[in-house]
Length: 635
Image (cartoon, rainbow, N blue to C red; front, top):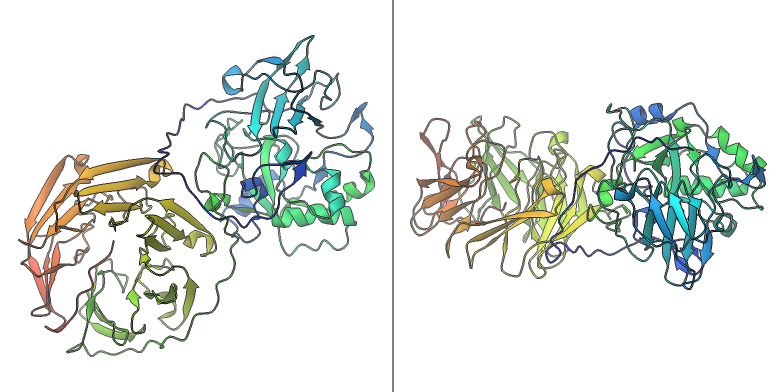
């Protein structure tokens, strides 16, 4: 269909820090489509990655209604002729020796200059007299290079076109952000085309290109361009990923159509252009059975759901995915059921857990963990006490709000098997779930990295400086990996840029340097600060209440706190004298004013000393004994 001529250009130019952000992940994507000996993009490319395990988005029904819940699918391809031309988007394969021709473009600023190895006799979509999109496409099967032209007219020795794009089929690289291609979304066309040969093989191994009548004036990964002036959230974005619901019964359909429907379930569809509702794209072929293809009209839009494929992204400038297919984790080993008690700890080996809010009153509770028997002892901000049994000898406490109910869940990380065991506060600590996520030597670094209000399961691997995050927004089914750190660095994840997402960050004790990989830049930008001396302990938190974590250190030698304030653009600082040699810092917001309170735990007396930022006074609590063992709080 004739695309909208509305073209809005973006000046976005993401700057990659290549040495620090070359993401390496394992792929589990199945073998991809091959044409003329060329794999159509790498196996881990988003076009070739299954999305059948991703959860539907909260706005799925709204977007489907806008696209056309009551409309049936239409195969915009087939056999024979329509208005004198083959039905579908044609392409040709050419050798590396194919003559390359220069091209001029209406949208030269968004087009690759060429030259283009597209024969001047190449078939035009819609035929030579078409007034439609007039795509002309060639694949150089010697070098595996894809050439695509939009609104293409051959001349005597050159091409004239609306726009053009050249893709290395061996690469996951995306086009420059804001650029169109021969398609409105700035994506290649061929990876989304259905061919008869792959249907004949019994399996389509990629997402399918489709169109919608109205789109939003923005785009979502892996798209690079939008083509609309509409801003309403009810409109789908270019690049939107949909799939056919798993519950849809495909058994009444012809075998060739079943193959297409299976791909819609497993790989889904990618919105690539403005056009008629639910038109899917394919290449013309005399072997298509048009009557069979017409049965797709019985598959209504209401049988679709929208998914968030960005959880598979490893870089905004790459089509590579992280390889996770959302396999179900095995059941956890037996863990003691939690038991409640009002008796505070009086003896034994205890460890300070990073203080947090277990009762949902937005104030941190004084919390201890006994590694010898997995006992959690809470002195709540409300004044009540509680004891729970949750963990085994050798477990590491990893409390977090994994279910998003505003209360911390009891959780432990088991280094011996890399298992996480979470006892849910939303079920009054009556049920639990286990997740395998880690390897020997990993450090648990739970935090909300995806901004969904829930803690993500995550580990930092000191041996490689790698961060491995299992995202709660995918129901802990998919993950992302960030290489950010070096042996000896201390992980200090927190939300330093105030976007609601924890940033992977490290503190380098040897230099006092902080290195923060900023989520607000899609992990393409970073910040560094020199803030600390040898022997200092990092205690990052939001001390000034601006919604951003401040780099901060505690100096055990003199009990000093030094905070680099984010509210001053990290140009000003504040300091506190609060502690003595041997004290352990236990910073948290104990008074609920939105600011972190400097606090220490004194093992010699089992006492907590909290400096309240709300009024400048302090509070003390005796919760522990002189024989307690301190586990330093983790960020």
